[in-house]
Image 1: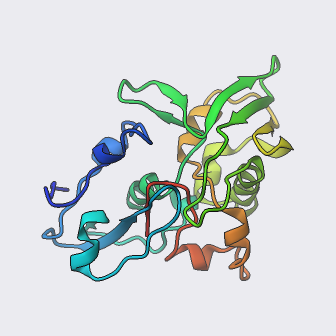
Image 2: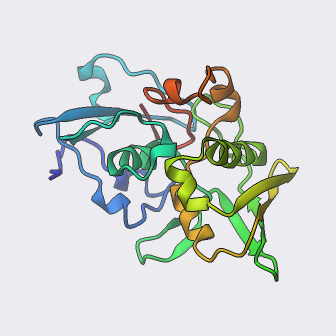
Image 3: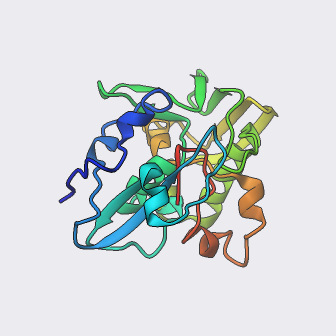
Length: 224
């Protein structure tokens, strides 16, 4: 069970940037709780801030305590509730749920499904930055979806009919499906968009899974 530590910032401090949907309601922090402590440092204007000593970074650090540490924090494992909680703070998604449990755009400003239900045209917010200052573009969305499908594990189950993505320009893409799939857009709340260029520097032999186990490559308000 999570308990709130009043000395640790909560998601409310970031309400102007992200509307925390129903799963974000499970967030809590406690330095005193027994279990694994996951430290997330706040980012400023999309550019990551380094974490110093516990005393100096406390004001900008969210501590998540859990009794069962996950093997990896790669967001492709977002079906693991602990990984998902951390990913919610470190990454952004195309869509999300608001406090009224309504599906609303996040990185996307709009999306339109074709008449046959097999393609989804998405327009992205411009000016979004990853934590290292790199711009988030349609290419990163396509890369993330392609990686998820290629690895074929965990989060891939959320987007099973996914085939490919056509990048039209930096803020416009078209997602292609093998068949109509009503849960596809709601399931995008579990597909966390990766900084493709950053992960490509650490691909190794497993599409960056080893590196992402202990690092993040997101655009969310916190970083590991």
